[in-house]
Image 1 (cartoon, one colour):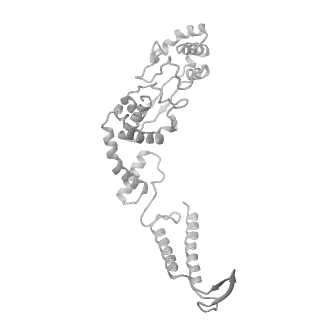
Image 2 (tube, one colour):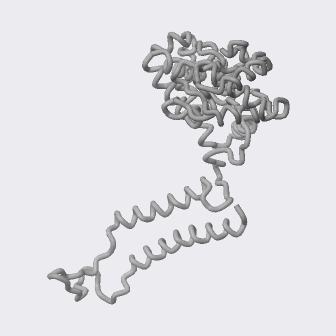
Image 3 (cartoon, one colour):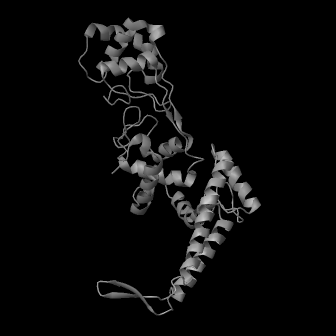
Length: 316
């Protein structure tokens, strides 16, 4: 924060406290010329105003609040760039990477700084890490039957995965539906956990330059025919010969290869859309979707619980 705003905030804050104190002192002084307890000669609705001082308990409480406000401003940040005597911060600011966050947390611990976020994370780790460690000892398939574990996994999923896969896990264009038991890399508990820990990077190449528009049209026709779609038979027949270059990943029968994440082209389930236009776009320009790795952000034990939840969605 700039010097101008620091001064501006400090003047307004401290000036308000000083003004409150002076107003209180002014109210305690008898400036009416009327003796304490006498009639002020003000009448309203049958009520007579008496010259009485402020209640002592109220005055003392007001002084306490003023002192408390000054002590608070001295100990904690509240006056612009002033950091406070305790060095308290809500969180480590300006963090761009997980590594920077870890370094900032370690530095704050060594310097004895009070970083609220770090303290809360330490408290959460002490309380919940043993629970996640116990869950991690149970195979994913068995943990998927534990209702309490699934509630935890669902919350972690909503916090970390729903932005892409949706809160109902049914996905959207470019992001897989996790409820239909159709898996690019395999749907076992171990494979789901592997995907979450290490992430996935797709590598569908672009074919427009090598095949040309006519070649793309032929391969699209053949690809759509694999899932029982009505297509131009002549185009599909020509595309069958060209499909040989695609078979390296998808197999000669088009059923895909989970070892490398190549989709099954025969089940009429499409990650980027199954219309002729969408499949043409895929072949023209390729697809390079990225599934981020959660090993560092969640840790393996929490990933284990999320994997159990995801596994449960398609294995009721």
